[in-house]
Image (cartoon, rainbow, N blue to C red; front, side, top):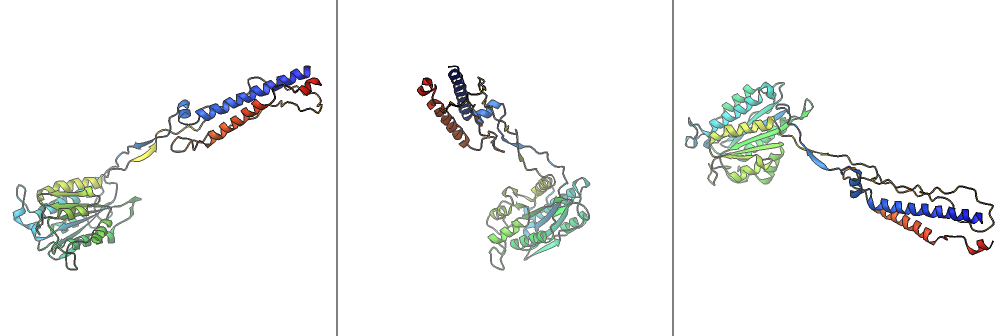
Length: 373
């Protein structure tokens, strides 16, 4: 009789422990870890935020700058002169270019030529030819300015040839790393007219699509500056063509008179000397990988560990505490803060259902044969 009582107690303890394990597994599969589990843990999921970077000091990035200036006859015409006192378009182009070189040449901005930080080259086009007036290299600011001021105006607008000359000089003489910093390659292209002759033949001056692609590929940034109202005349700037040369497209500028050039060039030199940094994306909060709900598998009633009597040959009821190991819950993704998947939840629910069925269908008391004995 005493033996049967002890067996019933052990069976009862086993069933209670089993049901506690079932409840723990169901709770874990439903509430964590996941969106609700992370919320319960008090840690927000990982989110991407835009980090604001401080702008670098001006004059740190080495520059290779190629000036390509239209010196066709219309650039020197007095009927298109502007400003007070009145000056021609080429006068303003020279004035703006010299001011740009002088700004680059300031000690605080890195300097021009020799062992200084920046290199400036000059190409020009007019009449029927294009010329590399001063190759991109170690020429001093004074040498570059002298070459700019020596330009004269004459004839047609060999547009395509001017593009090729300047891009070729950049490609042939550009630098790579300087003091461990990548050199920025910049082209500044200026014109006030249409290509003349205005065709794409071998003797023509209008660039083809491949010509434009090759030109733009020669530099990381291309500033395109058109002077005039625009139109279809040979002395009227081709605004669509000029806009197609800019890289990126926002670097195209049109001024109606030459007097607007100094302001445009002043803006360009500020942009290239003090580049705007690119934003970076960084995580705002590191996700927690700890499970939000700690499963409990300890029984609330300590089972008896007294030894069983000598077996009699009958089937004994199970007396051990089931060992239930929940699947790992540290499956939060490294970047999203969400679990890798819900397969473990399904597996855990299945395990709980299996254990529950065993508890339901297992005998709750000793068999009649046992009692008769």
